[in-house]
Length: 154
Length: 154
Length: 154
Image (cartoon, rainbow over all chains, first blue to last red; front, side, top):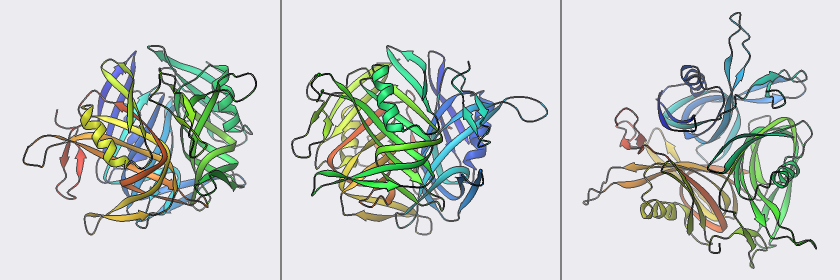
């Protein structure tokens, strides 16, 4: 994974992040966010991957169900955001929380999509990360256990 | 639905709009646009919904055909714009015109997509609305009856 | 195809490009990039097309396989970027390189997606092109023969 700051307007940074062959996009994006102290941002990406683990949120079970993708696929769309989630570890440090969804395209043009847990890039994935000025903070929703953006508290 | 102005550069506002459980995203986005006098903007969103009415434009019938989605679905992508459509009501007032498309992801990773008529959010939908400076005005296309963006008239 | 400069902040231009009925979106976007000297940009679009040629990159053959779409389809998402590819012709001039992926929606809500080779617009396609300051230059990847963005060389 390599990244470059494209520009900065009014303190808001826009980065391009280019994944290398074999990178897990989810892991590398979290690392990128930590390394660059990105605490609120939107992202879009296109490229391709050689395997992936997507997920669907099951309302009955209140948990994500994995959807494995075991073949080469075009990343037709990848959209999401990076926010801050209060630290759950002993350190109490805030951690970047990725909320990223993707639609993948298979050989015959059919598509498969879901929440991105893992996406092993091949040969490339080009991600544009656009920073937001306000820190988008998340809190755990009691009903679902999911970390959702809260706008009601500064 | 709650919204927050994220930043404003050269008079152009960027908002984040977070839908609540049970909100109809189409209805709430139109309300958000009216309340904030947004007359030209692009938008992207990810999240999930518990039911939706998508639509396909039928070239023969020159009308939208509904595609009902009656199960919990990930909103894998939601992209579109907000423009101004000349008022059709007696008041003659301009109204925000939403042109939003979505791809939804089901339990097995299969996808369903179309023009968004209604999308009942659950548990969340995070929308970023980026204002454009020029008012994007629409006019009704004679052949299709659809309101399309016109660039040839200021 | 008609385009309009929406705004320019810190030398970075944002355009809206509206395709006409019958335009090939891939061809017109390349023409737009040449005409406006756009050498690094991201783009998003929604609209519809009456036919298209999408493609899937075959890892074994190291070449794109066509996926023809021969019916009216909603353009549910179109995401990509414009970069500069070193000229391959005798002129040696740099050329805009489009890397654009799309998800199309059919009558029953099913979707088909891939790399966009051709997309014949009907009735409209609304594209937002957002310029990046650094020229995103591409180089040919030896393994795949594809032009990938290089960040390691200024």
